Image (cartoon, rainbow, N blue to C red; front, top):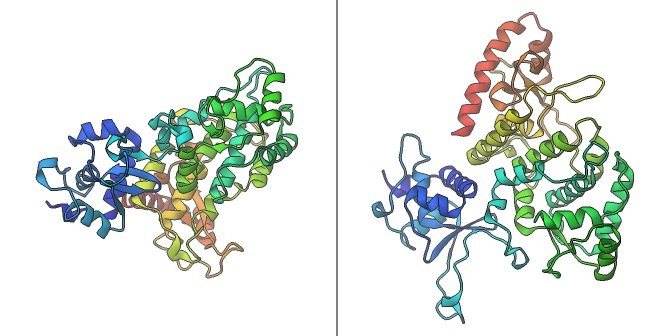
Length: 423
């Protein structure tokens, strides 16, 4: 039992737990004080380095968390180990910096100054998904209006591509007005000021040059006039943008949540294509990492986070069908992403005689994600009951003479691969 035993995956799991619980609850759970000097930096967030290291030890197989008295912090201990694992650790002790002693210690996921009043829990992936699915929207027609969902999907597409978080109002207004004209399937007017003003009050959007925010006036004349006069630059709140930019699993879970909540009887495919989210679960696997099967990687912490989000969604929508002519079951983009990432780009049938060497136009292996137990027969839309198959193995599983035997095998394989990915 030693600090040097911790792994990169264990540290990532501890960071994910920190994000989920919040700083104070995390420190209380593991019995640590706030960091006085060394902070771990990960995806824009700052974390108490010694507490993360102690908790990470508990994420090793068969081990427990280390208590604060069992190891030393500082440059020669915690900082050295974390840096050796590839993490950035910053020294927050700068005695020569004017006013340093008077500055509050800033840890946890980073927020910009314009978001100082944004509660930390909005940075939790779980809380972000919950907050978005519980958006207050106009339901005067009996169905939820699409102003805010369309705005969020547009901003998510921009975050996914790494485009600037903040835009001048003229560009935001032009882009959103066109999307509302094309995809406002419940009579939405091309009025971007409505959703932006409302999302500011939800604290998912920010107008950094206007700390007092948009006037909360009733009727549309005041709000329209305010945007016309102030021409505010704005975009997603910094921590929201950061999560949606860096976590493909969270981004896909949010897409699932928005479509389930607001587009249940509509075809959102043209909208997703317009905002660049139509094939996100497939292209995100290799985005920024070159090409080839070796690039299909997902950390255990990210896999576990995605499964938890899926399980929350499963509890909320289990058994529901999309109200269209075919009445098909809801299928999660996040679940498909996790299975493809877990597969490493290879067919998961251990008896596969060889999948095609050819690839798709996007340079991805030719794989199909399959539910081993059909959803119509009570199967789960969850990686523990899903596999990635090459077209030939998929055909055998669906209509081959040995399909019953293969399905039994694949169900075991799915569970084994799922358990291994979480480890």
